[in-house]
Amino acid sequence: MGKPTGFLEYRRVTEAYDPVPERIRHYKEFVHRLSENEATIQGARCMDCGIPFCHNGCPVNNLIPDWNDLVYRKRWREGWNALDATNNFPEFTGRVCPAPCEAACTLNINDEAVGIKSIERFLIDLAWERGWVLPHPPKRKTGKKVAVVGSGPAGMAAAQQLARAGHEVTLFEKNDRIGGLLRYGIPDFKLEKWLIDRRLAQMEAEGVRFRTGVLVGASDTPAAIQNAAKSFVSAEELRREFDAVVLAAGSEVPRDLPVPGRELEGVYFALQFLIPQNREVAGDAPNPISAKGKHVVVIGGGDTGADCVGTAIRHGAKSVTQLELMPRPPEQEDKALTWPYWPNKLRTSTSHLEGEVKREFAVLTKAFLGENGRVRALRLARLDWSGGQMKEIPGSEFEIPADLVLLAMGFVHPLGALLEAFGVEKDARGNAAAPTEGPGAYATSVPGVFAAGDVRRGQSLIVWAIREGRQAARAVDLYLMGESILPA
Image 1 (cartoon, rainbow, N blue to C red):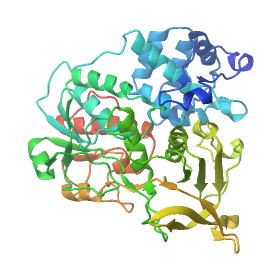
Image 2 (cartoon, rainbow, N blue to C red):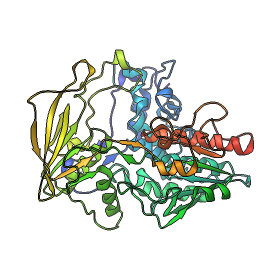
Image 3 (cartoon, rainbow, N blue to C red):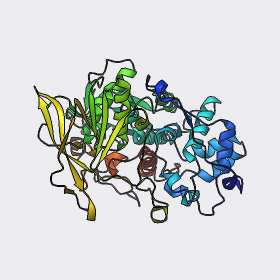
Image 4 (cartoon, helix red, strand yellow):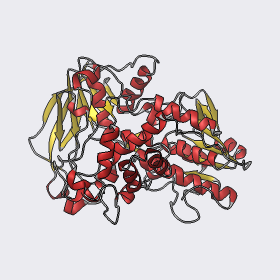
């Protein structure tokens, strides 16, 4: 694939970033895609490795060596066609996917992996610019009606695939705009929202109907879950009006931290901070939670935590500290032990490089300390993880100042009331129980009701959501028609 000796001749080149002092003044994307020459050279680095482990590293099974080779040969449109065959939204994954494909790259055993993610973004952005991304309305209508509940990447992928199969698809969303966490969870500096709107126009031309501001199944949601619904549709009504229902509502219930002082003002879940910020950028009301001039503490070391860090820096925080319960990972993974699987290593995001961000590992939050009803500090303790067991180190307690605390510790399960409204059985973690293989793939315990994405597998990656949305769409098509024209 590519140039047989390319991986020996060329080094990996990453995308360029705007300088930190410039980019922290706005919420626009600051990563620049590869030039045509850079993309060609990076495509040349793809080895003729025989067994492309990147295929399995990528949940949507992208034909990575194929489009790397086509990019090397400057056959841009053919490269785009190969990318489009497996991924509905490469402009999303090319920006915010952590690229497990690169971890699985054969070249990554003893060198730097092929820049698969940057080539993916290059191809899709070029395809949009040259007018190659067009609607694919079905050649025939089946007369079947499908409801998709939840408009994140799983719901969008399922809706698009089902519409292309000829079904009448309605996509339900409780908030006022389509996109789920793509729209409201991921900051604009990582994913600008016009990218979503452009895809929605394509989907609408393919026959997908959007119904926003509609809460399905559950009569209400907890305060920690974003809900802008102005109308309600019961599970019974949906099952009565549609031939099949796909639940793709995500895993929305955030993990809490029930320690003394949790009720203090100034302690919020991450999305209570990020969602209003995205709304402010979109021209809605200003974010009621400001980090300006405050000591900000982010609890949780994942992507959502990093998004909070970058947003707090743009607000003008006085200081930013990020806490992680687990021990500090190694700077470099042991490739002989982990390849081709996703490795445990220290990950530093662009947000961590934008200011004086202090990162504390192996620390336990014991209490939020307050004054006049507001948080003012955190009481922490150091942890000993030797032997794989978490043990508090005696006498290690210390305090750090905190005017704003953001809990970014992930999500535990989908909204239980939604699954209960449909009578869907849950697994041990509170997710919708549904297999992924065999004749009942993605089917729940309720006939005609399917589940895909985080609502089924739990909190995961955007690329897994797209995969499950696509596969669930095929399962629904088989259920309705007895056969399917959709790819497996």
